[in-house]
Amino acid sequence: MARHSHDPRLPYFDALLESFEAGDMAVSEAFGHHVHWGYWDEEPDRAPTPGEFAAAAERLSREVWQAAGIRDGERVVDVGCGFGGTLASIDAHRGGVALTGLNIDHRQLLRAARMHAPSAGNTLAWLRADACALPFADASFDVVLAVECIFHFPDRRRFFAEAWRVLKPGGRLALSDFVPGRALLPAAVAAGFWPGSRGFYGKVDMRCTADRYARLAAEAGFLPLLDRDITRNTLPTYPFLRRLSPRLRELRLSAVAETLFAELASRLGFLRYRILAFRKPGD
Ligand SMILES: C[S@@+](CC[C@H](N)C(=O)[O-])C[C@H]1O[C@@H](n2cnc3c(N)ncnc32)[C@H](O)[C@@H]1O
Image 1 (tube, rainbow, N blue to C red):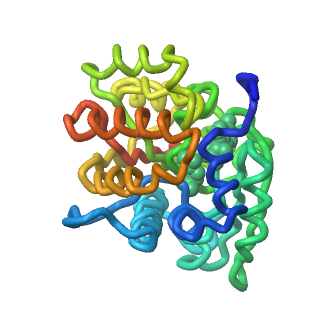
Image 2: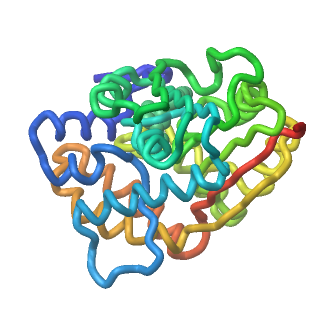
């Protein structure tokens, strides 16, 4: 089916939702809560099982939300929230928090709302919207999170401006992203023009270098809080994805090609997986 550029449905989410529907236990176990790379302290000597992958994905979520220093009683919005795994993780570890999950794809929000109920004393709400046009009043959150999703957004600059606007003075923005070194830029730009590159992951913009992030954040008015390169910790994700790819049927080729590009670039040091956090001045 032809897709319009503003179509919120990403091919890999179509594949995940179909697999859940078809009762594929391995895919449900691995990606039922979190849809992002995993985090390992040490590289295991074999490909992770679906359960081990899910545990590693939970660890990555925690690394990102802990980078924002979330405390009891705070108001948090997770943009591009997927199936709500990151908010469920915060809900399990913090009290008195008001949590909002925002996503452009309502199918993911329906699943998130079915799966997660807030713990006593916390609140959990789900909202369909574009992360670059946040439907919230100024200064309404302590924390904005964006876990492995900013590369899909139409415009990083607009997202930074929106995050700054909805944060209270002293509020924090934490995100994770694939950040290219300068040497990878031509390949990342070229990959954006190769039609096959949209086959599995959809529109992905991997052109934001560390320097550009620093400029975007400064232009929006943020102060840097943290910049962690966790590429090494995410590498076991790739053997796991390779093991799963035969289940993808017609999407298999593009999934393998696109994932291999990211794996080679990461193993060679041209593409870094980073956690970045920023603070809005004040308080
Ligand atoms: C790799 S998934 C990450 C999901 C979730 N953050 C997680 O870590 O499990 C990327 C997410 O970004 C969402 N997304 C893409 N473009 C968006 C936009 N413009 N506004 C809000 N969400 C968006 C997708 O629907 C998807 O849920």
